[in-house]
Amino acid sequence: MLSKHDSIQRDQLEMITLDQLVPPNHLVRKLEAAIDFTSYTFGIRSMRKTIEEVETNMAYRWFLGYGFHDKVPHFSTFGKNYERRFKDTDLFEQIFYRILMTAANKKLISAEHVFVDSTHVKASANKRKFEKKIVRKETRAYQGRLQEEINQDRENHGKKPFPSDKFDKEETKEIKESTTDSESGYYVKDERTKQFAYSFHAAADRNGFVLGTIVTPGNIHDSQILEPLVEQVIEKIGKPEAVAADAAYKTPAITSYLFNKEIIPALPYTRPRTKEGFFRKQDYVYDEHFDCYLCPSGELLKYSTTNKEGYREYKSPKHTCATCSFLSQCTESKDHQKVVTRHIWQTHVEEADHLRHHQDVKPIYAKRKETIERVFADAKEKHGMRWTTLRGLKKLSMQAMLTFAAMNLKKMANWTWQGPKMT
Image 1 (cartoon, rainbow, N blue to C red):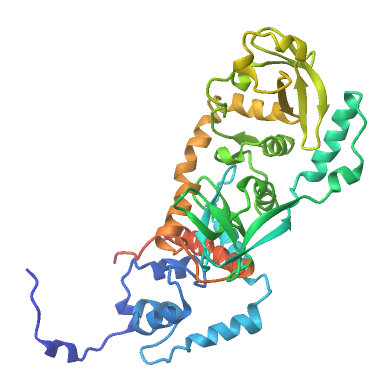
Image 2 (image 1 turned 90 degrees about the horizontal axis):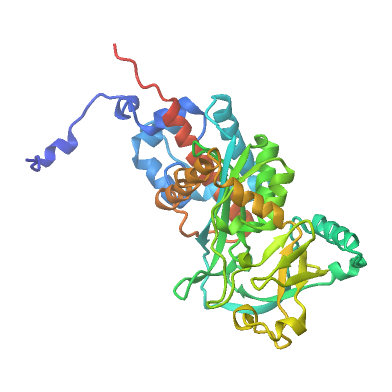
């Protein structure tokens, strides 16, 4: 049983070196052996707290090269350095990729399968302080490619292509803009979770190393970021054989992009969203040869047009449907006409659905929970990524880069550490 010793022990003098105070297997020794700098490694939220820790923690002093009596710089020095030397530079991106390339050189990166996801980080903004604004909808990364293929599809069906101004027409939406941090986005998950937030999008390899990251406002849909994120990975690391992501990324645009890049999509099953009591979409059978749909009663739904969103419209004959016994299960349309839509890239979604059963693809998707999901869990639990004190996309991008750089560094340090040799 432990008991309190006489306080005189506190004044005891010893001859000891700083090196002796740092345990042989302490993380700082592993970090020094792996690479020659530190960052957000220990999940300390502020520079003021970091300086306090360095002043009292002998392991931190040892790592930074400070002696027992060396004065540690004031925390404001680092803030001034950021404003004068590092603001509006790509320093934090350089740090991230320096660590990543070091890990790659040590043969620790295994990026043939890439796992993509995002997590929301609560912004430093009161959710009740906002203004409603009308803003232009974001341009999608694949918009130009989609427009070309829409017009080609219309021409193939004997329709006139849309004029360019049909696509260029400005589309707007109403948003809530924070008066505290205008670059954050209003995020609604459910009735209890409504807040201003940022989205940290990331890609990881099968070993859990983060390969790339992009920060956006919290109201940007995940599917819009996969393409630029994968392009980032291709540029810095190389093209993967497969990309795994959850149901939010299972879209015609994403599956088309991945197949065109000769990358296998590893995506989950998604349940059809059909109003109760009505036929599901798969109850209408598509005939690729004749380019038409067959309804449950055996009636043809013929091609009508391709709209500017990229969906072909197939319509049933009104006069026949009006007397059909299945009408109440088919449509609520006033003119008794059933319309089934099919995206021009729908075949890619269907091919991805087929592939998810393949013996080589199924284990890839299952690996998500051990890779990117674990990355975000660790980032939230150990590195303060549930919320932020910073404001603005530039500073949040800095936080993401440094946090993921630190996580990669810790993993590399632990994996390469050989420990002190026994004598």
